[in-house]
Image (cartoon, rainbow, N blue to C red; front, side, top):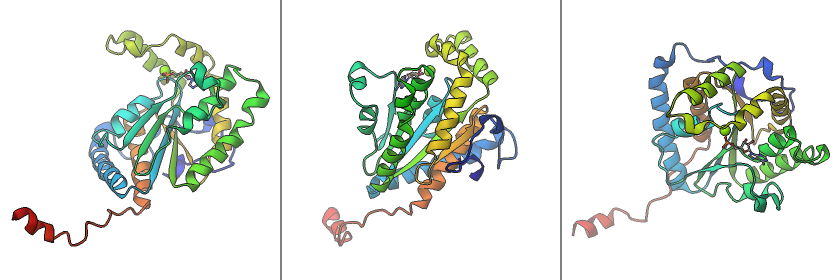
Length: 270
Ligand code: AMP
Ligand code: MG
């Protein structure tokens, strides 16, 4: 999935990154189902192995505009994975207590422990995205944060965390369709937030802020992937592929069983 990988330090122009392509896939949505199912089963057993081995930590960071599909990824990609050992942390507008600390304070306590997978639904990156676009702090404050975030993620990686960061890239028209669905479909109305229209009105500013994030914070040990996300099924497929390939590379092993485990059979059988 090299085509989605953001080369560290490389300039990023999001207009050049497709939102509706389906690289390494021939066919339509229905044709993807068998592969998605297979990847899902693999993820399920890799997660069990990660938990059993209790050595590695996996941090997944999801970012994207409203309705880009962050919740959908969590629901579909992790479908069937044992909830024991997987946690989701959603980062909203900071509370007064969170704001009275440094911006990484609320983040750090949700990073994964050994054997855990943690999914960040939004993250520390909001502190150089929303905070930048909404001008919540002066420029000289947020500009320093790229270095802090790189150092923070480097520390997590050095201490045994595998980090994957996904930017769900959607077209502005596709976002309109999805927001319209939230207005029109009674079952989706709860998701509609009038504030999303203000964010949409600042689309270009957000794209620019995302470009800076991708350029300045993609690292070999904490790579960004730009995922074409107009097609929900392809978005799920691409993320599943990257996650499974990354977990397989960890060469995990089940821990050694109890010594002379066979003798317990006699004990149990009597
Ligand atoms: P949602 O993910 O749709 O529930 O919305 C959460 C909202 O919280 C989004 O509009 C984010 O931009 C906003 N948010 C998250 N973190 C921060 C932050 N550190 N500063 C300001 N706004 C934030
Ligand atoms: Mg939202």
